[in-house]
Amino acid sequence: MKRWLSVPVLGLLLVLAACGDETSVTKRFRVIATAEVDGQKVEGSTVMEITYEKLDEKRSAVGRGGTATATGEALILDLKGRGTVYVLPVENYLPSGALLEVYKQGLLRSLGITHGIGTLTGEDLDRVRQARGRIPFQGLGNRLPAFVAFRDEKDPKTIYEVDPKNVGQSFPGVGFVGLEIEFADAPVTNVLKQRLPWLENPKNEQRFEQDPPGQQRAVVDRPIGFKMTTELFFEH
Image (cartoon, rainbow, N blue to C red; front, side):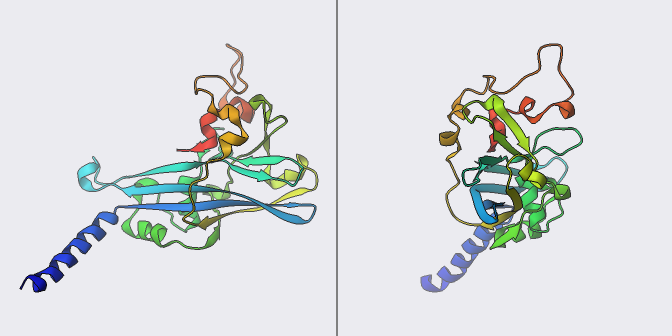
């Protein structure tokens, strides 16, 4: 009798466990940037992790909603002695000029999911959960993350923006090929602070350029160096 009862009990536990997983999914993926240097392709990559959660009626005042949390850091793309491009986890192409996170929504768009984070369905989460392989990155409005470089990596104030559609303007002989996502179980990358030690400085210290008091410009009119903070090099 005890042996006969164990089967439905086990089945019930499995069903309950599965139901608990339906409202959230955690996915780890590698962001891969490919460039061409004098006709030869080079790649740089960084591993990130994002968790999407669909709120149930009891946790949402409007009966729906969702959240996304992420960990990761900017991608380092070394150009075979020509220099280095850093692909930030934010974009800089909005009319407002704001630097906004790119991968939380970009991962969804890359998988063909059109719902926003606050309106994700169980089917959307299943699509994220089942994602495999390597696919092109698809940002909102086909926008790419911001690309930056430094005239001197030891001095954050020497940061400048690189146009991904015309990388050769900043690095002669170099062209940007594309940005892709590859789903993987590798550890989240943690090397950026070794490359740029000044990222370890306290958040309240001014590392980048800043307009003088009384002469501040609208955000959209500021070069990227006047909008940067150390936090913008990380996904969180």
